[in-house]
Amino acid sequence: MLELYNDQLIDLLAQLDPAYKEDKALKLDIKKNEKGMVVVTNAASKECTSAHQTLRMFDALGDVISALSTNEKFIPYRNNKEETQTSLSYASRVKLITNQANKTSDSEEVAKLKAIIKQLKAGSVVDDDVAASEGDSASFVLFESASGYALFEVVESEQIAVLLDQVQQGVQDLGKFGAAVKLKAFSPFVSAESALENINAISEGLVTDDLQAFLELNLPKAKKSKSAAVTLGVSDKGLAQSITDALHLSVNTNETTLEVLRGVRLHFAKFIKELDHGVWSKAQLGLGHSYSRAKVKFNVNRADNMIIQAIALLDQLDKDINTFAMRVREWYSWHFPELLKIVPDNYVYARCAAFIQHRTSLSEESIEELSKLTMDEDKAAAIVAASRTSMGMDMSELDMLNVANFTSRLIGLAEYRQQLHAYLHSKMGQVAPNLAALIGDAVGARLISHAGSLTNLAKCPASTVQILGAEKALFRALKTRGNTPKYGLLFHSSFIGRAAAKNKGRISRYLANKCAIASRIDSFIDEPTTAYGDQMKEQVEERLAFYESGAAPRKNVDVMAQVSETLKASAAAPLKKRKSSDKAEKKAKKAKKEDKVEEEEEVVVDKKKKKAKKNKE
Image (cartoon, rainbow, N blue to C red; front, side, top):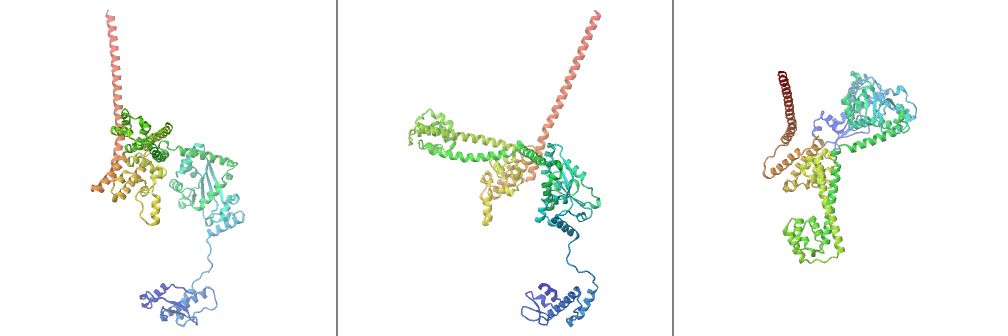
C-alpha cells in the first residue's frame, strides 16, 4: 500500500482542485470501504470525490507494484476501471525494469570485520584472506614507552565493534590480541637523559628528531597517488597534529586507536623479550621519577608556588593576629581600660601594653618612650595622665607576667607578618611584576592562588578573572535566575572602591581585562619588567577619569606599542655604551703602544749618541 503524509496529499490534491490548498485547516481521512475501495473524507465527514478518485488510482498502482515485485501469477491491472489505462501504461514501464530484489546486505568491509569478530569470539586464528585489509592501505599505531618508541601494525581493527564487551575482553587476551597487532619496529632510548628529553617533548605535543627519524625509517612510503594509504594512530591530539605537519601523514586518535594502544600497553613487555621479567616496570619507575623531578624543578626562580603559600599564610596570620589582639585588649583592659580609647591600633596597643605593664610605673619620664611607640607626644602625655586616674583593677605579678608573655607573642606575630609581606612583595616582583604593579601584591597573589598557578591564570579569559572568588554567588544567581556578581577578588582593589556605584561593573570588567593581559605577559615574557603593568595602571586611572569627566582615554594598541618601543630602546642603549667604551679602550691601547714605540725609539737614539761620543773621544 502506498503511504502519503497529510500535507503531501493536500499538495497533490491541490493540483486537481485549488480549494484544497486554500483550506489550511483541512484534515483528510483515508480508509477503505467494504468493497475494498479507497475513500477520502474531510473533517466534516463529507466525501471528497476528486480526492478519493486520486487515492484509488494510487492504491491500484500500489497493488500492481506489489504483485510485480513478488512474482505473482495474477497482476491486478483492472482493479478499478477508471485507472485501467494508467495502470497498464505504468506496468509497461515497470516491466522493463530488470533487477534482483534482495534483503539489505552489509558492505564487503563490514562483512570482513564481522567475520573477524566471529573468529575472535570463537578463539580461532584469523584467516589471512579474511584479515587482509582493503586495497593497499596499512594502519599503524605509535606507542611511546619508557624504554623507547615502538611501531605496531594493526592487521585488523574492529571499528564497528570497538566498544563491545567481547572485543574489549579480547584485548586482554594476549593470544587474540597478538593475532590482530604485530610489532613492526622498536627503537630504544640511548640514555636516561635522552628518554627524559623525548618524553618531555611528547607531553608537550612536539616531534623530536629521534621520533621523526624513527617514523621516516619504519613507515612505508606512500605513493603520490595514494597519499592516505598509510594511517598512523597516536594517543595525543597535539602530537597527532605535530606529526601531520612534520611528515604529512594521516594521523588519527579515534576510539579504535585508543583501544589498540590500551592492549599494547597491557602486553608490551610480551612483545619485546628483553623488557620482560620486570625490566619494563623498572624503566617506567625510573623515568617517572626523573620526569616528576624535572617538573618540580622547572623554572625554580619564577615558581609561583611560593606566592600561593605566602598569601595563604598571610591571610591566616591576619585572622590570628586580629583574634589575639582582641584577647589582649580585653585582658589588659581589666587593668588599664582607658588605654583602649587612646590607642585604637592593635599593634601599637600591644607594644604599649608590653612597655607599661603596671600602670602605676608610669611617670613623666615615660612620655619620651611612649611617644616613640605611639609616634605622637600628645597621646603619650594622655596615657600618662590616664594612668593616674584609671578605674582599672590591680593585677598580681603572676597575672601581669602572663599578660606580658601573651602580648610579646602577639608583637612577634605582627612583626613576622611584616617580614612575610616584604617577602611576598619581592616574589611578586620576580614572578608577576606587571600584575603586581597593576593591582597590588596582595590582590595579584590571591588571583594566582585562586587560579592555581600563574599559567592557569594566564589561560583564563577576562570574564573568568572578573568573578574569581565569587563562584558561590555566581551559581546561586544562575540557579535563582538573579543578578550575577560583578566582581570577586577584584573587589579588594582600590579601583573598585573609587568608582561610583553605577560604574563599578564597568571598571571591574575593564580591570579584569587588564589583569588577564598582565598575567599573560608575566607568564610568557623572558625578562621580567614592570613597564607594561605601570602603563596599564595609568590606563585604568584614565578610564576612571573618563567615567567621571568624559575625557577620552588612550587606545590599548598605542600604549602597548609605546611600551614595546621603549623597552627596545632601553635594551639597545647598553649595547651602544659598550661599543663606545670598546672603541675608547682600543684607542687608549693604541695610544699606549705608540707611546711605548716612541720611548723605545728615543732610547735607541740616546744609545747611538752615547756610542758616537765614546768613539770621538
